[in-house]
Image 1 (cartoon, rainbow, N blue to C red):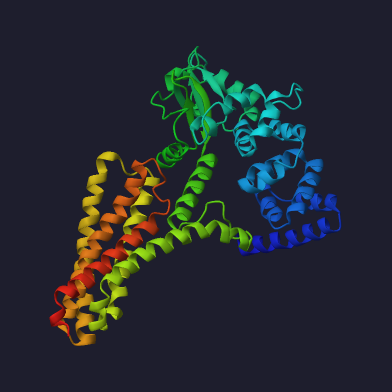
Image 2 (image 1 turned 135 degrees about the vertical axis):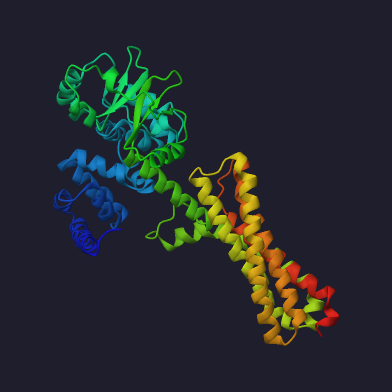
Length: 460
């Protein structure tokens, strides 16, 4: 979260840049932007209109092409795409050559297929996708191979500490991260790792193979990027090496990339739980938000209609005991709350890699026990309230039993739905709350009104 002082500073800068752009003075706007970091410039550019954004970014590129490219890599995908698609193929090629290969691969993934084809097929070396980038793009999206950078320092195992130190001093500015030094054999197989501290504390004649750790945490090129990010977080790493199927060192994934992945995945899960499209942003247009949210509202309307159908089946019972209509929301709503709690815990566990196939049954059993405990607690409280309010112990008992049943169903639904979605190869969070809530609504209404129908003579 930005501090109030920094937020205010960016607001003032946004207003100034907007004024410069509106009068056509993009050079002055760009000159102001050069005083900010790339991430802050993104915030400022997001506050501009679409036409002004492109003009200001082009002005920044004329002043500082590297900074302009860095800004592009920091932008949300939709915003970066809107700028890239308005550039010529030669300009896009120049941008791709000016950023690290992993960032370039991500930018290419945002481009329309026809533009990518143009970049691949153009014979002009100033426009084509480089062989290194083409190799990067051969890996599937959202894998370690696509996320990694190939700009890393690998040292031969026969090298001494002194030789490694000199190599590092001569070439450190060429590499993205040198906190860890990876050691390879003559076929570039990853055989060890050591830190800068070890390099400083050992005699210069010491071979690297004697001080390196050979138990290196590594990932394969085809590993899912979310699993990689979780591994970096779990072991508190600054980076993790990427190897191919033959254990050859091919790349490196740094902690900043892992943070980006975890943030993206968390955003997707939060949005999916609420049935909101991941591309929606708080500063977007109302029309776009309506278009993105309306499909899930229709799904919710359908599930709500199913719940109302359950109520319709018991219209006669409700007509005879009007108090049932007052208490029905309690029977369904409490189950919905319990289901959301279970759903949140399970989706979070899946997202963080804390659940495997063998633990699913254990998690489900645990949530059922929790649901039973919540049902007993909420059922007793609900029964006492209903009995006191309407002066009818039987009515209170029926509400308590309905709450007990629905809490257990809520636990099962809140656990089984995301697990089932994952089993089908779908996002466990995708709209799960809509289906789980529908399940608890129907169960709550059916249990409470069904019991009331069975014991109707005691309620009149």
